[in-house]
Length: 213
Image (cartoon, rainbow, N blue to C red):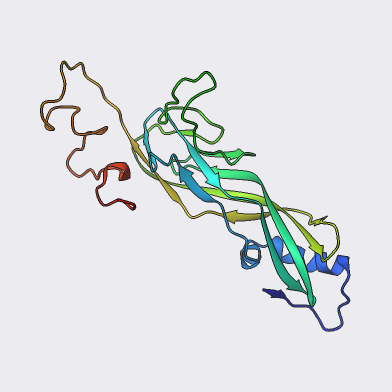
Protein backbone atom coordinates (compact mmCIF):
# COMPACT_ATOMS: atom_id res chain seq x y z
CA UNK A 1 0.00 0.00 0.00
CA UNK A 2 1.29 3.46 -0.85
CA UNK A 3 0.09 6.26 1.44
CA UNK A 4 -0.99 9.26 -0.69
CA UNK A 5 -0.06 12.81 0.11
CA UNK A 6 -0.73 16.25 -1.45
CA UNK A 7 1.73 17.29 -4.12
CA UNK A 8 4.75 19.10 -2.74
CA UNK A 9 4.49 17.64 0.77
CA UNK A 10 8.07 17.56 2.10
CA UNK A 11 9.51 14.30 3.36
CA UNK A 12 10.07 14.95 7.04
CA UNK A 13 9.81 12.68 10.05
CA UNK A 14 6.79 14.67 11.27
CA UNK A 15 4.92 14.32 7.96
CA UNK A 16 5.71 10.63 7.66
CA UNK A 17 4.54 10.08 11.24
CA UNK A 18 1.28 11.93 10.53
CA UNK A 19 0.41 9.79 7.52
CA UNK A 20 1.43 6.51 9.15
CA UNK A 21 -0.48 7.45 12.31
CA UNK A 22 -3.64 8.02 10.27
CA UNK A 23 -3.38 4.50 8.85
CA UNK A 24 -2.46 2.86 12.14
CA UNK A 25 -5.24 4.41 14.18
CA UNK A 26 -7.95 3.07 11.85
CA UNK A 27 -8.38 -0.69 12.05
CA UNK A 28 -9.09 -1.04 8.32
CA UNK A 29 -6.02 1.01 7.48
CA UNK A 30 -3.88 -0.99 9.88
CA UNK A 31 -4.95 -4.23 8.21
CA UNK A 32 -4.30 -2.71 4.78
CA UNK A 33 -0.73 -2.07 5.88
CA UNK A 34 -0.35 -5.86 5.94
CA UNK A 35 -0.68 -6.46 9.67
CA UNK A 36 -2.31 -9.74 10.71
CA UNK A 37 -4.75 -10.15 13.65
CA UNK A 38 -4.15 -12.77 16.31
CA UNK A 39 -5.75 -16.18 15.92
CA UNK A 40 -7.71 -17.86 18.73
CA UNK A 41 -6.10 -21.16 19.69
CA UNK A 42 -6.91 -24.05 22.06
CA UNK A 43 -4.92 -26.94 23.44
CA UNK A 44 -3.62 -28.72 20.31
CA UNK A 45 -4.68 -32.17 21.58
CA UNK A 46 -8.20 -30.99 22.52
CA UNK A 47 -9.22 -28.81 19.53
CA UNK A 48 -11.53 -26.61 21.64
CA UNK A 49 -12.95 -29.45 23.74
CA UNK A 50 -13.53 -28.68 27.43
CA UNK A 51 -15.69 -29.42 30.47
CA UNK A 52 -18.20 -27.33 32.40
CA UNK A 53 -16.83 -25.78 35.61
CA UNK A 54 -13.24 -26.51 34.62
CA UNK A 55 -10.56 -24.30 33.13
CA UNK A 56 -10.46 -24.34 29.33
CA UNK A 57 -7.11 -23.06 28.14
CA UNK A 58 -7.50 -20.53 25.31
CA UNK A 59 -4.69 -18.42 23.93
CA UNK A 60 -3.84 -15.97 21.15
CA UNK A 61 -1.24 -16.69 18.51
CA UNK A 62 0.37 -13.48 17.29
CA UNK A 63 3.90 -12.11 16.88
CA UNK A 64 5.56 -8.77 16.50
CA UNK A 65 5.20 -7.80 12.83
CA UNK A 66 7.20 -5.56 10.51
CA UNK A 67 6.15 -4.39 7.04
CA UNK A 68 7.68 -1.97 4.55
CA UNK A 69 5.45 0.59 2.81
CA UNK A 70 5.97 3.57 0.56
CA UNK A 71 5.09 6.84 2.29
CA UNK A 72 5.61 10.19 0.54
CA UNK A 73 7.76 8.40 -1.99
CA UNK A 74 10.04 6.96 0.68
CA UNK A 75 10.33 3.35 1.89
CA UNK A 76 9.24 3.23 5.52
CA UNK A 77 9.38 0.28 7.92
CA UNK A 78 6.38 -0.06 10.24
CA UNK A 79 6.61 -2.36 13.26
CA UNK A 80 3.62 -3.49 15.35
CA UNK A 81 4.02 -5.07 18.80
CA UNK A 82 1.02 -6.69 20.56
CA UNK A 83 0.57 -5.27 24.05
CA UNK A 84 -2.94 -6.14 25.29
CA UNK A 85 -5.59 -8.74 24.56
CA UNK A 86 -9.34 -8.27 25.03
CA UNK A 87 -11.19 -11.58 25.21
CA UNK A 88 -14.83 -12.35 24.47
CA UNK A 89 -15.43 -15.95 25.55
CA UNK A 90 -18.81 -16.20 23.83
CA UNK A 91 -20.86 -16.83 26.98
CA UNK A 92 -21.14 -13.18 28.05
CA UNK A 93 -17.82 -13.17 29.92
CA UNK A 94 -14.92 -10.93 28.87
CA UNK A 95 -11.39 -10.35 30.11
CA UNK A 96 -8.31 -8.28 29.34
CA UNK A 97 -4.79 -9.63 29.63
CA UNK A 98 -1.31 -8.33 28.90
CA UNK A 99 -0.19 -11.84 27.94
CA UNK A 100 -1.25 -13.87 24.93
CA UNK A 101 -1.08 -17.20 26.76
CA UNK A 102 0.06 -20.43 25.19
CA UNK A 103 -0.29 -24.22 25.19
CA UNK A 104 0.18 -26.06 28.47
CA UNK A 105 3.37 -28.00 29.19
CA UNK A 106 3.21 -31.77 29.56
CA UNK A 107 4.51 -31.65 33.15
CA UNK A 108 4.35 -29.10 35.94
CA UNK A 109 7.22 -27.53 37.92
CA UNK A 110 7.39 -30.55 40.22
CA UNK A 111 7.37 -33.06 37.38
CA UNK A 112 3.70 -33.96 37.83
CA UNK A 113 1.52 -34.46 34.73
CA UNK A 114 -0.51 -31.38 33.76
CA UNK A 115 -4.28 -31.78 33.49
CA UNK A 116 -5.04 -30.36 30.04
CA UNK A 117 -8.78 -30.05 30.78
CA UNK A 118 -8.53 -28.22 34.12
CA UNK A 119 -5.42 -26.11 34.60
CA UNK A 120 -5.80 -22.39 35.24
CA UNK A 121 -3.78 -20.05 33.04
CA UNK A 122 -3.71 -16.28 32.56
CA UNK A 123 -6.05 -16.62 29.58
CA UNK A 124 -8.15 -19.68 30.52
CA UNK A 125 -11.89 -19.48 31.10
CA UNK A 126 -14.40 -21.50 33.14
CA UNK A 127 -17.68 -22.12 31.33
CA UNK A 128 -20.74 -22.79 33.50
CA UNK A 129 -22.96 -24.18 30.73
CA UNK A 130 -22.50 -26.73 27.99
CA UNK A 131 -22.55 -25.70 24.35
CA UNK A 132 -20.45 -24.31 21.56
CA UNK A 133 -19.16 -20.79 22.15
CA UNK A 134 -17.51 -18.44 19.61
CA UNK A 135 -14.34 -16.99 21.15
CA UNK A 136 -12.72 -13.83 19.82
CA UNK A 137 -9.74 -11.75 20.87
CA UNK A 138 -9.14 -8.12 19.98
CA UNK A 139 -5.45 -7.28 20.10
CA UNK A 140 -4.02 -3.83 20.80
CA UNK A 141 -0.76 -3.03 19.06
CA UNK A 142 1.82 -0.33 19.66
CA UNK A 143 3.25 0.81 16.33
CA UNK A 144 6.62 2.30 15.41
CA UNK A 145 8.14 3.46 12.13
CA UNK A 146 11.54 4.36 10.76
CA UNK A 147 13.03 5.70 7.57
CA UNK A 148 16.02 3.91 6.14
CA UNK A 149 19.03 4.36 8.39
CA UNK A 150 17.01 6.05 11.15
CA UNK A 151 15.98 4.93 14.66
CA UNK A 152 12.51 3.65 15.45
CA UNK A 153 9.92 6.31 16.34
CA UNK A 154 6.85 5.30 18.33
CA UNK A 155 3.45 6.36 17.00
CA UNK A 156 1.03 7.80 19.55
CA UNK A 157 -1.97 5.69 20.48
CA UNK A 158 -2.68 2.06 19.71
CA UNK A 159 -4.16 0.13 16.79
CA UNK A 160 -6.58 -2.76 17.23
CA UNK A 161 -7.37 -5.85 15.18
CA UNK A 162 -10.07 -8.42 15.94
CA UNK A 163 -9.54 -12.11 15.34
CA UNK A 164 -11.78 -14.50 13.51
CA UNK A 165 -13.70 -16.55 16.09
CA UNK A 166 -12.53 -19.88 17.42
CA UNK A 167 -15.01 -22.34 18.93
CA UNK A 168 -15.01 -23.73 22.46
CA UNK A 169 -16.97 -27.00 22.62
CA UNK A 170 -17.97 -27.49 26.26
CA UNK A 171 -19.37 -30.73 27.72
CA UNK A 172 -20.53 -31.97 31.10
CA UNK A 173 -18.54 -34.71 32.80
CA UNK A 174 -20.24 -37.56 34.69
CA UNK A 175 -18.89 -40.55 36.56
CA UNK A 176 -20.13 -43.84 38.00
CA UNK A 177 -18.57 -46.67 39.93
CA UNK A 178 -17.81 -49.59 37.63
CA UNK A 179 -15.99 -52.87 38.03
CA UNK A 180 -13.83 -54.63 35.53
CA UNK A 181 -12.61 -53.66 32.11
CA UNK A 182 -14.74 -52.89 29.05
CA UNK A 183 -16.04 -56.03 27.38
CA UNK A 184 -17.73 -54.22 24.49
CA UNK A 185 -18.23 -50.61 23.32
CA UNK A 186 -21.89 -50.41 24.35
CA UNK A 187 -21.00 -50.53 28.04
CA UNK A 188 -21.12 -47.23 29.91
CA UNK A 189 -17.87 -45.30 29.69
CA UNK A 190 -16.46 -47.54 26.97
CA UNK A 191 -17.32 -45.38 23.97
CA UNK A 192 -14.89 -42.53 24.59
CA UNK A 193 -14.50 -39.50 26.88
CA UNK A 194 -18.07 -38.26 26.22
CA UNK A 195 -21.51 -39.86 26.10
CA UNK A 196 -23.58 -38.70 23.12
CA UNK A 197 -27.32 -38.22 23.33
CA UNK A 198 -29.84 -37.86 20.49
CA UNK A 199 -29.11 -34.72 18.52
CA UNK A 200 -25.55 -34.33 19.86
CA UNK A 201 -22.68 -33.86 17.45
CA UNK A 202 -19.40 -35.37 18.64
CA UNK A 203 -16.62 -32.93 19.56
CA UNK A 204 -13.95 -32.47 16.92
CA UNK A 205 -11.46 -34.65 18.81
CA UNK A 206 -13.79 -37.65 18.31
CA UNK A 207 -14.79 -37.03 14.70
CA UNK A 208 -13.44 -39.43 12.10
CA UNK A 209 -13.49 -36.73 9.41
CA UNK A 210 -11.56 -34.06 11.30
CA UNK A 211 -8.69 -32.32 9.46
CA UNK A 212 -5.46 -34.28 9.51
CA UNK A 213 -7.10 -37.69 9.77
